[in-house]
Length: 173
Image (tube, rainbow, N blue to C red; front, side):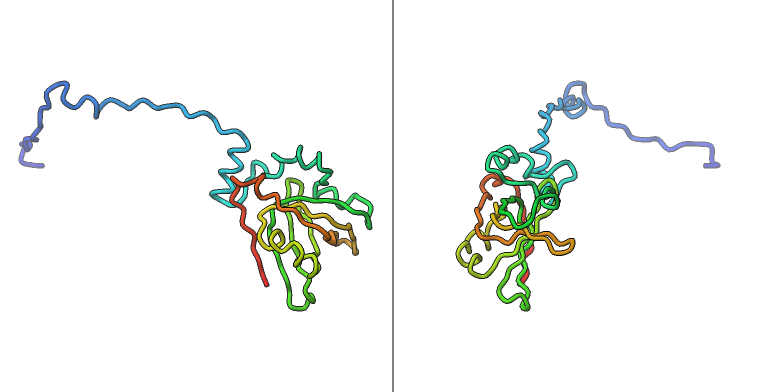
């Protein structure tokens, strides 16, 4: 520094035209925007949930035509009547103290529905009860204090309606 002279820097001269492709930015192809359904499915595939929506909302018109009530409506409906609810299976739980009863929680775009599945119903609909990622549950609405549940007598597998959603339930025994 204090010697008063600078070191020479070596430079390489590249003839014009040989490396233009490297220096030129590549064109960016615009991707089409994802629909809300595609965004929700992508969220479920990567995070297991979405803050943008719920997969069931995209099949709600079909569920409405089948007279399937949203889980959020169960608290306002009269008890001791038969209803159908549908949703993704969040969990299946069979405590050793429950005498063969399995508790299942379904989730739709409005909330969760608690199901009570007696052993004979579990056995009759075992494939659906144990394996479906989404189902329609038929049963009698019951309310004990603030606990609302459906005493199930029939189950239908509707996983195929949501085949592109990778929902996985947590199952405990």
